[in-house]
Length: 325
Image (tube, rainbow, N blue to C red; front, side):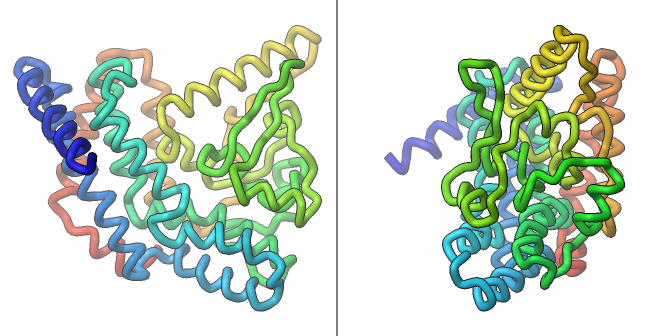
């Protein structure tokens, strides 16, 4: 069985090569797959070699918490998986790449496949990945009850005040992030956040109340994922589910004559000292979204993205690793 996956990948690449003739997008897909694969492999090496800043800080915070609060060990151990390749964030990147390679029929067209490859290429940048790790890292900080400072983010009190947000308890940075849980909808139409596996311990340990999408969508606080990384660290199907849920919630409020502000209508205040790469990537993502319905602009954006990816692939990533962010 171990030989089946490589064989499927070879067959898929062969089919792409045959079909690429006359289709520039399919040709771009064929060329981008090995670049994205290499980028994810380099990220794995950076994590293994201690070259991702916030992964290193997570390891330090985890050890401090284990000393001060040994009863938290099962939950801390789960978070520490994100310091390597066994955590949900890294595994999600690998799963998405495998979907591109082995289940291309899951995408609407070649352009959607190419866009996903570019998103994965960006997501595997060690600097951006370090920024994304600030969410689970800051959950560990909050678990310390002030002993350990937050990283790349304002204090909880400051961000709650700045955003006029509700406090959804310890772990709120990860609510909405499909790597750690999902929104489940009951027979009454109400959607609530459900943690995956050991992450559900946060409710038991810290008494965090059950979070409904109705409340969270209108009054969420800042998180890196929801305000900067959502388009890079979500698959197309996950993004579609988020959009569908937000649209249904808005219609439900409007049917009752109530106002609803989308969870994603604007960036929340709360970031501090995030990388310039995250800021520029967010600007690019917003620009891309605003032009999504303009076909000529869409094609131009794709061509530019291709050129950018090849420029990046020719340069080494050691500079990012040395910075350790």
